[in-house]
Image (cartoon, rainbow, N blue to C red; front, side, top):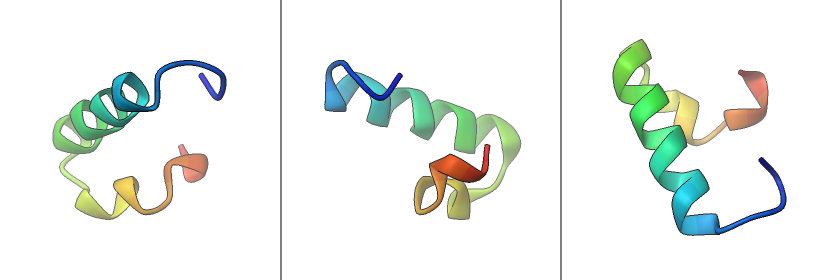
Length: 32
């Protein structure tokens, strides 16, 4: 997931954050 399109990763993190209901996840995706 590290190597790839940053925009696609951002979208994935955004979806994961929205699904988890934790906006703070965007600032610390490595915690997932």
